[in-house]
Image (cartoon, protein in one colour):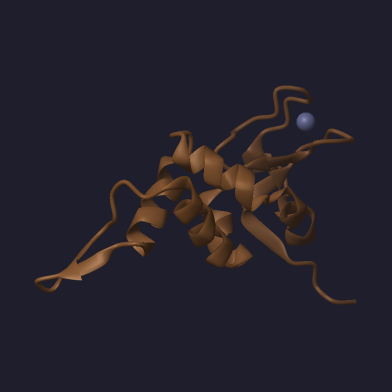
Length: 110
Ligand SMILES: [Zn+2]
């Protein structure tokens, strides 16, 4: 039997539905499972939750600063031997950047 691929960025609680939580959440508010006592989530169950448009809007409107920093960095420019992240990029540019990222690259920013 092939090994099931899991991701260290998500965990499963004991609920019947909506049981996938980001590791930034330490506890499920419904079943009270704790992240450190629960298994990592399966990658194939996490993937459908990844919607580029939703992720991009969260980053753009300030509720995912880490992803926004990554987007700005990817749109940056080299000047005098130093890399500068881009400022003031549009929502469309943000979406194009998120769409250009692979799922493996996106998962750490969810
Ligand atoms: Zn739960």
